[in-house]
Length: 325
Image (tube, rainbow, N blue to C red; front, top):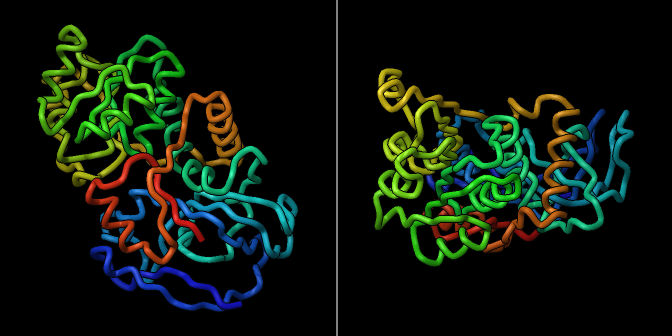
């Protein structure tokens, strides 16, 4: 069966994304053929494409998708033909009309979660769960700073943190994005292009700073992040949209108040099947409780991946973006 699949033969800008026709073989042992219905767009996709995160070339792109099982290989018992399923990795190749994927990377989608929502939520939602509850272990009553609070993960972080009783300060680049951050539940929103974020954070917190910073931007916000963090506070640096953070000076962490810094990746927190299952169930619970609302800001046709990457990197999206297949 002929399928359309995105490939990169070299790293670089969005123009390196190419679409090729492939004939999928029958799924091998432990594999499933998954027909995609919706595919998630995530900032990590741009890191793989650009070479920020090295990958073996040629490579596929994307790890998040929702669809239906079309065929199963030997030994597969947890899913069956016709089941609605989702995946969020770690294997890549979701930018495709269909693919063979390891069955242990799939989960059955509940009837109350549609394909677009699943494709917008699985990777970002599990990332949010891991950052808040497994990594930072944020407690009720703490004040937290969320950079890019109108983004896909940012909005989920805001909603999740509010649901567990934290006070949330968010940043946004423009007034319209500030509105999205407030709608997600942010108590305060700082326009980082117009205001000194660290100064405003100290004003809001009575000079103390925040207990935890969730920074998905990276180098461009690093100094402001350190300056906004309270004594013995935690910096969770989880992304590189503004460049990777390099050359951390331990003396600086001491001078800023004995700060803690971590650079988590999702699959160090979702190692076992039990960890994956518990995380996904927690995400769906927060969704059903209306604590998180995966706003789908834009949709793209699957083969418009180049345009989608350009829009994402230019800051022209808010919330989550998905590809329709």
